[in-house]
Image 1 (spheres, rainbow, N blue to C red):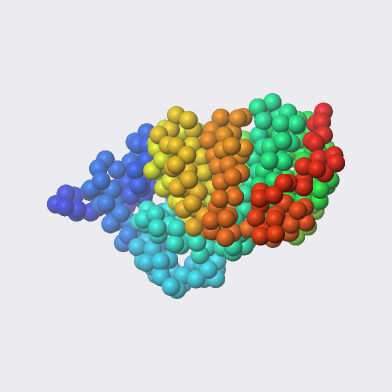
Image 2: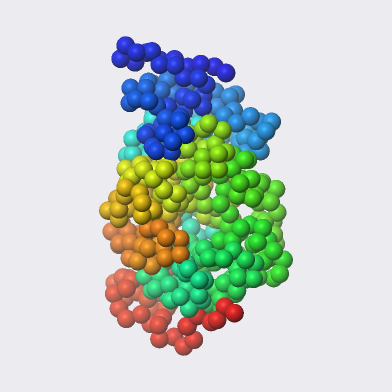
Length: 464
C-alpha cells in the first residue's frame, strides 16, 4: 500500500493509502469523525487535498478501495470501465480534471460521453477539491434524460416525486395527499408510496389503487410502492400493475447484503419489470435511493469516508439504467450529517457525483428533527440544487412526512422553484395539467379553482 506525504506550513503529513488520503481530504462531517476517519485538523485536510490534486486519475484504476476479489461492486466498477471514454482525460491528475470540468471545453455533450469513463472514486476525489459553486456549475451542464410514461431530465424541466405516505397506509389519506400534490403540479417523476407495512398483499392493494386513479384520469406518470425488491418481484409474479422497481442501495457488497440485495437480484427485478412493457415513452424501470452514512451504519464501509462510498452506490445504479435515483440526504441524522451546512454540502456533492457518472440524479432535501438544521437550510439547498439542474426533488404534504417522521420539501416548494426559475414538469405531464384545466390562462398552477376536484369518482377507492 503506497504512502502519501505532504509538507504543509512546516508540518509533515502522512497518509496511509488512497482510502486514508480521500478520507482526510473530505470536507468536515460528523459521520467521518464518528468512524475515526476524518482529518484531525484543517491543516491536515488542506495537506491531503494538495496531495490529492497531484494524483494521476489512473491511480484509481490500479488501487481498489475494496478488494476486487471480495466485493462485487468493485468488480462492477472496474469491469465496466470504458477505456475509450476515459482516454481524453487519462493523462490528467485529479486537480487537472477539476480544471477541465470548470472550463468551457466541458460541454454537456462531452460530459455525457465522458461519464462511462469515470469511476466513482475519481468523481468523489475531484468533488473534494471543489467549492459549492464548482459543484453547481459542473452539475448544471450534466444532463441525463430518462423515460417511462413521461420524460425526465430535459433542459428547462424540474421533476417531482409526489410522496403521499400515511402512517397506516389508509387509502383515503393517501388519496387526499395525491390530490393535493397533483393540484400543485407534482408527481411527474413518480407517485411513490413508502408503505408503512412492507407486505406483498398490502403493496398490491396500494398499486391497484394508484393504477385505478391513473387510468381514471389518464395521468401520464409512473407509480411505485417502495417495497423491498424481493416483495416487488412477488407482486409482479402475482400480476400486480408494477411500473417501477424500487430498492435502497449502497456502495459495497457488504452494505447491499445488509439491505438484502445483490446485483443478481437487481438484474432479475429489472428483467421482470421490463417484461411487463408498461412504459409508453421509454423503458427505464428502476428507482434507487441512496444516502451518505448507509454503509457506515451497517459497519460495511471498509474504512472509506462516507461521501466516497456513497459515490460507489451510483455505479451500482448506473448499471441498471434507472429512471430515477435520489439521495435521501439528511434522513439518517446528525450522527452522519450534523447540521444544515453539512447537509447542504452533502446534497450538492451527491448530485454532482451522480450526474457526472451519468446517473439521473434527484435529491430528497430533508433533515431529521434532532439535527441542527431547519427549513431555511432546506430552502437554500433546494434552490441551489435547482440552479445545479437536479432532475427531480421529493415533495410531501406540508413538508412533513407523517409516516417516516422527517422534514422534506413541500408541494408548494416545487411550485416556488418552477415559478422562480421558469421551469416546468415533464412535457407529457405539463400537457396533462393543461388538459385537466389545472393551469390558468397565464400558465399558472394553483391560481384558479381546480377542475379536478369536481370530477366524478375522484375519491380514492378502498384498497381492501
